[in-house]
Amino acid sequence: MTVTRSVPKAPRPDTREIRALALYRTRGAEIVRTGPHTYEVPSCSGSRSYAVDYEAESCDCPDFTMPRRGREVGEPCKHVYAVGIHRAKRRGATARRLAALEEMYRHELMDEAERCELMDEIRGLRRRLGL
Ligand SMILES: [Zn+2]
Image (tube, rainbow, N blue to C red; front, side, top):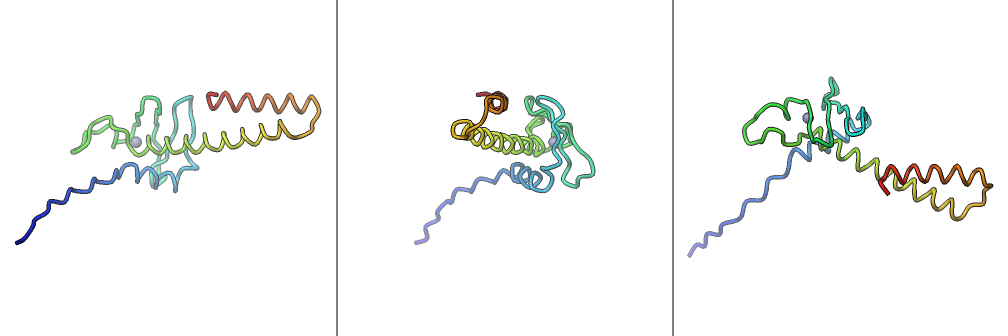
């Protein structure tokens, strides 16, 4: 007797996220912050760039603005995701720097002026991280 098993289809990998990661790896260094929530993100070829508003999760690239089959208009494109990766990495670097400065503040001998300067920098980093 033959048993036919129905194998559930594997979910399709989110190719947009994978493409965003590839874009970040090749062009991440070219992402430029242009405002509190806005960024210029290069295209994969680097021949042009797109304006991303990370808060609104919008982009002015054709993938975001043009209706296409199998995709909702206004669904975040790879440029929006690439900014997400960029922000997460920057945040990680800021958090590591803050930890190092706090460690220095606790354990290193320094004069009052240096201590004040260091505390200012620590406060600035904490603010950037929303702490
Ligand atoms: Zn886009």
